[in-house]
Image 1 (cartoon, rainbow over the protein chains, first blue to last red):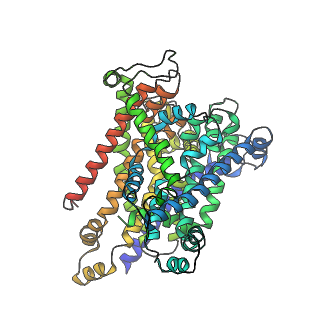
Image 2: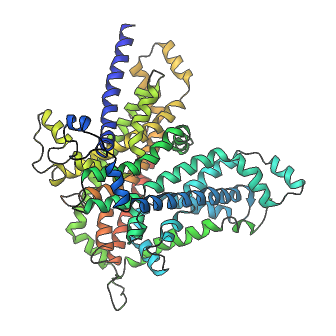
Image 3: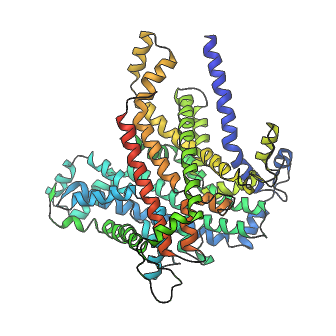
Length: 273
Length: 290
C-alpha cells in the first residue's frame, strides 16, 4: 500500500501544479481589474494592492460598457432562442416526416458541419453589404439562427423518443403544431438545454464575425469592444481587465450552475462516434 | 411517421434559407470570385482573370509564410494538446477527493472568450511579465522586448497559450471515452496479472482510438482556422500571420481584394478537406501502433 499512497501523492502534486498554471492567468485578470494602479507585475503587488471598484464604474460611466454588455446579451440571447426553436423544428421534421427531401436536407446539415466557417469571411462580408444589413443587428444574428450541430444533436435525441404519445394525441384530434409544441418539445428539454448553453457560450465569446460584419461603435459586442480597447493608447491594464472580467463573469456563473449540462453537451458528439 | 411529400419543406424552411444564403452562396461566390479581380475599390466592375490569383499566391511571400505558420501551428499544437489531454484525463479518471475541482479548473479556460485570454497573455508575455520571470527562473534568457515582439518566439508563445486554453476541453472528451470502456476488461486483466502499464497499452489506448481520432480531427480543423489570438496579440507581425489572417488582411483591410482573398480561402478549404479525409483514413485503417 506504500506505493499506492506514493502514486496518490504524486497525482495530487502534479494536478495541483497544473491547476495553478491553469488558473493563474484568470486570477491575475480578476485581481488586476480591482487595482487602482499598476498591473500586478509582482506577486506582492498583485495580492496586496488596495482594491477598488472604480475601474468598473469608469467603464460604465465614461465608456460605453453598458451598450456593449447589452449587445452581447441581446445577440447571444436571440440566437439561442432561435436555435432552440428552429433546430427542434427542423430535427423533428427530419425524423418524423417521410419525404424525398429528407436525405438531401440531412446531407446539407452534415456538409455544413464540415465546412470551416472562417474561410467564408469575405463572401459573408460582401453578402451583408449587398443585402444592406452590413453593420446592423441583423448581420450579427441572421446567419446563426439555425446551426447544423443543433439540428444534429436534437435529431439524435428525437430518434430515441417513441412515437406512441404523438399518435395517441393525433387520434384525440390534436393539431400538428400542438403535438409538436406541447408533447414532443417538453420531452426534448434535456437536449434543448444542452444546445442552448452551447449556442449562448459560442455567441457570447464570438469575435471574428461580429468584428468583420459591423463597423459602428454602437454595435460592438464585448469581445469586439475589448479588442478595440487594446488598440487605444489611453487604456490601461486595470480597465482592460475590468472589461475582460465583465466578459468572463456571466460564463463563469452559468458554468458553476449548469456544469453537468455543459459537460454532457461537449461529450455528446464524441461518445456516439 | 407522417407520409408527406412536400410538407417537410415548411418546418425545414429556416434551415433551407440559412443553408442557401449563408453557406452555399458564400461557398459558390468564393469559388467564382477566386477567378476574378473583384474588389471593393474597383470602379469598373470586375474581370475574369483565370488562374492568375492562384498563380500569384504561388509567388506571394506573405502567403507562403502564412501557410508555413499555419502548418507549424497545427502540427505543433494538435499532437501536444492530444497527449496532454490524455495524460490529464488518466490522472482525473479514477474517483478521489477533489477530482471535481481539478476537472472544473482545467476546463475553465476553454469556455472563456479567446479575446480575453489573448489580452491576458499579451500582458503575461510582455517584457518583465510573469512568463519572462518564469523563464529567467528556469535559466532561460527571455527575449529583450517580450515574447510577442520577437520572430523566434511570438508564434510559439501563441501556440503554448492555445494548448493551455484548449487542453481541458479535450480532457473532458477523453474522460467520456474512458468512461465508455467496460470495467470488466480491467477486472479480467487484473486477474491475469497484467500491470497497469500493460493495461494502458493493450486496453485503454486501443479502445480510445475513436475518441482520439475525433479529437485530432476537430482540433485540426479548428487550428487550421486560427485567427483571433493572432489578431489580438501580434496583428500578424513577427512571423505569426496565419492563413485566415492573410485572407482577412488582403480581403477585408486596405486593398479589399475579394478575388485574391477568395482564392486563398479555397486553398485553405482544400487543405483542410484533404487533411480531414487523410486523418480519417489513416487512423481508421491502421492497426494500433501503441
